[in-house]
Length: 304
Image 1: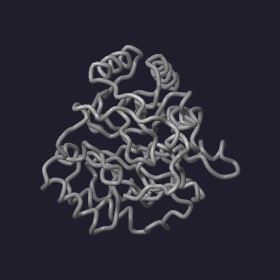
Image 2: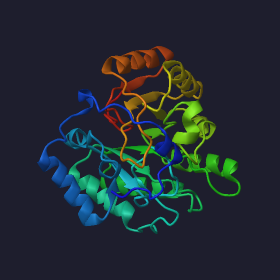
Image 3: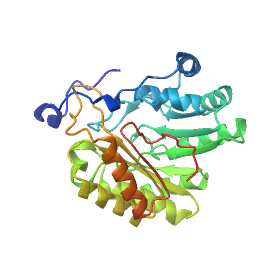
Image 4: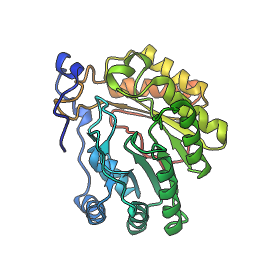
């Protein structure tokens, strides 16, 4: 996977961290399960964040009949300093057949729970909200028993972004996903260097708008650790998420994709993840996944 030719300033200036600890090393999974998924998505020229992001859990998720499809191409209009997905100001034109291709792939793979995510498409009139809906409709047409979770960008773009964001979120909510996920990614203090183009408050607004539109839809968010945040800041972020009635939380370790990305400031231990998970449950999250290799869609199909 290619990376930006201009490494983030923070990535060039920050010191390196110690070698990756043993608890972050795990087998990739069965070759047969990986090759089956890779063959199907390659034939249809579609994308999964499992592959684009080199997720360490993709073998396990495929075996559990779950996968996360990356909609609207593999090029993002944002330039977050942690993400491995390619960045660019000229993303690919939408493939009008993509919704049907995803639906067919879900059927061929026998997936019982699907996560639909997307790159940020600030170039589109609705930020891609309608494309989520179109893909959900196609998946349900072919796979009426499959549950669909969405992991969306913040839908912030355009000249009237504040009002548009709410309308775009509501567009996806009306399609009735099983869960609406949007990640704040990191603590409030670190939003600038980690999530360029995104804002902490905007992300909280996404989750707030979901509940305001339909309180029965479960909401979810995710935090990465390893950027230099403190436990106290993480607890504050958890409290902020609960204040907008976020139901579910994932907490995982940031792992540097390349030298062009932000370096890791700390590897949190499994024991520290257990502590963070316990705190999240005490604060009131109904469903918590906290561990070094946890990612946004890890065990997504499991009920709280």
